[in-house]
Image 1 (cartoon, helix red, strand yellow):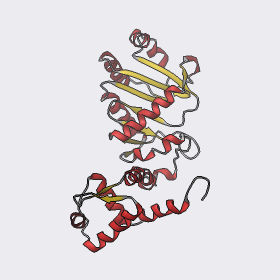
Image 2 (image 1 turned 180 degrees about the vertical axis):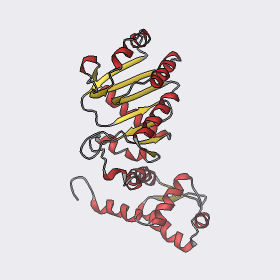
Image 3 (image 1 turned 90 degrees about the vertical axis):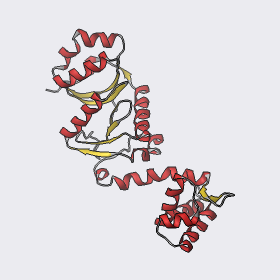
Image 4 (image 1 turned 120 degrees about the horizontal axis):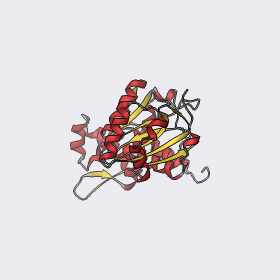
Length: 272
């Protein structure tokens, strides 16, 4: 026993997960209960082989048989299954995380990191910006973003203007060290943007400890992690539309929003 951990019991769980077939059984039973013979056919395995692994999983308390002879996950099994995505997130994105990190995240977000597993990696600064603009264009209810690079061009301004006119709410958290184009001052001073800032259709905050960039609308999101040396890499972005991916990004944005300071235009840097 180390601290509050029963190492022997924990090791026994990892032992059961070390079998490819037992892992497949758990993944299949998460989708719904089934009989042993049916699962043997689905996994192209013999009944004795499946029976042996069912017996092991039952003894460990991960699965159980109901009164109708169907097998299903126990509460313990469902809890273990909920952690599998987190265990697989890094291996599934091993090339990306050779040079990137999420070590700055609070523990409560690292514990849910598997929620980001259903995602695609967009590579290349231009493609990332195209995806970024797509998320802007697809926003119908709200648009939330964390910004370290603040580009301003005609297409972006036109998109934002149209969205604001259609009652899309925008929240932005700026890094105090954000790279901002010279055009920003004249654009923000336009009466249209002043109006939306005044009626709080546009809300802004600042944070000097931003290490992760996020953008999301009501159904899709993107996230850029920093490199190992701490620089935010805008040339690669994980994007997703699954409920879990979106919820993780939404919750992290909300966490940053609640822990950010009031917006001060004078604190923004200028990209010369």
